[in-house]
Length: 179
Ligand code: SF4
Ligand code: SF4
Image (tube, rainbow, N blue to C red; front, side, top):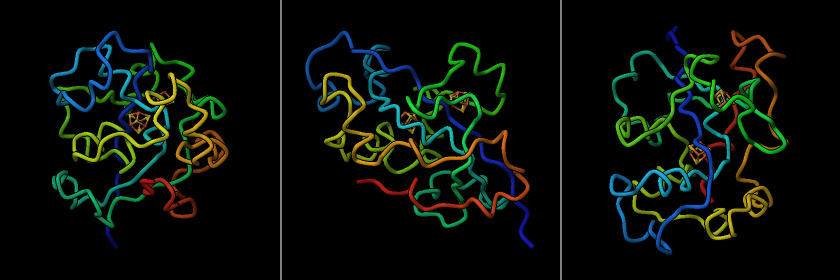
């Protein structure tokens, strides 16, 4: 039987209105964005706060993770997430409180393939542009994203309420939806 390990959870970053020109995401590469622009790309979906598991032998094939059936998403979410707002309740302390919560940065962009296909960083990295529900296209509001069903709101169970050894009972496909 294949062994599995828990995949790290790249953390969402705080979403603020960027201090920048309009539509910088169409003219700049991710690596060219300033910090404000970078942080505003995060749509706040919180899919990266879901527990996911990857087959041990697929660990090194990060570039192959896209469409890789060995990466399993569950609907189990970190207990530090506010599941209504889809925001981290301990954003500043998250690295200490949840050691496998890793913030996606320009320096660890290789981890972008552990993000769900709809992750706005991943979409930009893949040349897909931002989805029409993205908060940047709605004055920073997340309501269109929630309405489109692209956040985790209303779909999760807390990791404080389940036994992670039984993760197979919680595997779901909706985090892989991109539209
Ligand atoms: S999946 Fe990507 S866009 Fe969504 S909250 Fe996480 S980092 Fe932000
Ligand atoms: S600590 Fe938990 S809720 Fe906060 S960003 Fe990390 S995975 Fe998400």
